Image (tube, rainbow, N blue to C red; front, side, top):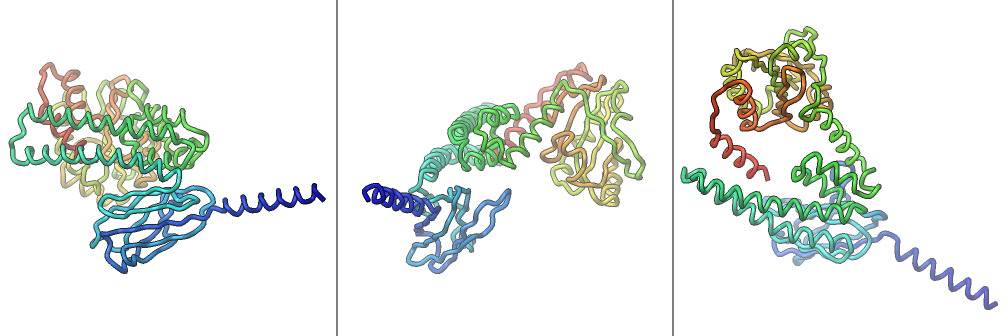
Length: 391
C-alpha cells in the first residue's frame, strides 16, 4: 500500500507539472495614449510575415489577452488606428507566463524571461537611437541652412559613427548571448545592416544550431555565400541575358576585352536608379574613350517601359535583361539585395569593387584611368548624409 500511495502521489505531481507547463500566456496591458474603446491587435510572426491571432479592446486604459503558445514566438501589438495614437508596433516574445505591457510613447515589457531580456536590450537601444536621431536632426539643420562647414561635417560624422558602433556592439552581444531563442533571430534579421557580410557569417557560425537552422537564417546564409563568390578579387560570373531587342547575349561578350567594365543592375521603375542615371552618364562621357564601359542589367518586366526609359534618357551603353524582375538569375548570382547595385570589373575579368559608393568608384577610376587626382568632399558628405538618414 505504501508503494502504491507513493506512486499515486508521484503521478499527481507529474499531472500538476504538465498542466502548469501548458503554454498558457496572459498579456496584461495598459496605455495612457490609446483612446478608449480602440482595438489592439496581437500579431504573431509566421515565416517572414505577421498574422493577426487575437484582438482586445482598451477599457479604462487597460487591455488583456489570453491564449496558448507552446513554443516561444515573436509577436507585436498594434493599435487598430495608429493615426490617433501614432505608436509604433510593440515587439514582444509570446511565451508561457504573465506578460506585462505598457503601450505608450515609451513602451515597456516584462514578466517572462525572454521579455525581461528583450526589454533590457530595447532600453539600451533606445538611448542610442535617441542620440543618433539628435545628431542627424542637427546635421540636417546645418545641411539645409547651408551652414555645414567641413569642420562641423567631420564632427557630426565622428559622433554618428561612435553611436552607430555602440549600437552595433550592443546588438552583436545580445544576439550571441541569445542564439538559443527566437529573439536573436528576429534582431539579427532586422539589424543585419549594422554588420558587414563577414561579420554576419561569423555571427551565424558562432550561433546555436536552432539559430543556424532557422529558414530565414538559412536563406541569409545562402545569400552570404553568394556574396563571397562576387567579392573583390574573384572572377566575374557570366550571365545569359537578352538585348532590349530580344536577342540572346552574355556578359562575356563585353568583358575581358581590355576595358574596365561597370555592371549597373537597375530598373526603369526604380527611383534611386533614375537619380543615378546622370552620374553614370557623366562617368561614361568622362572615361568612355579611355578603356571604360558600362553594361546595364535591367530588372524590368515590361520591355516597352525599359526601351522607353533608355530612349528618353539617351543611354548609350549596352543594355541587357531577361524581363524576369526579381526572379532574374542575376539576383542570386551577384547577391543583389537592392538596386541600384554596381560591380566594377577589371580588364582581366576580376572583380575590383562590389557595390561601391560614388566616392569609392570615383577614386578607383580616377587612379586607374586618369592621372589627375580630384578631391570628392561633396561626395563624402553625400555618403554620410545617405547613411545617416537610412536609420
